[in-house]
Length: 65
Image (cartoon, rainbow, N blue to C red; front, side, top):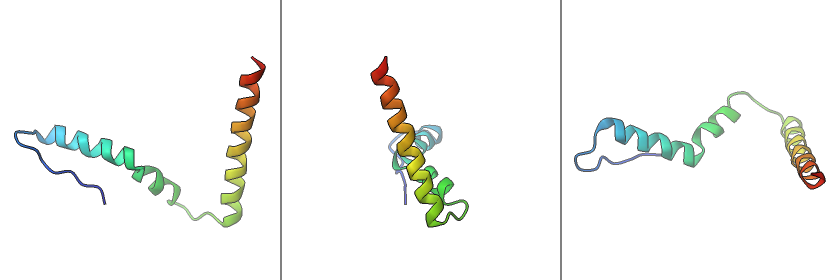
């Protein structure tokens, strides 16, 4: 669980900003979004393969230029 401690003379807005940055750094929101709906093993595997294909395609296009 992500938490931040209030420092001396720190405003609530600054503390909230530090908390938001920490949540983004830890990837909490990405995990929550990915688990919002059930995804079967087949779907997860297909998503991974699509991501690999996209990365390879970008690498090929970058090498051609």
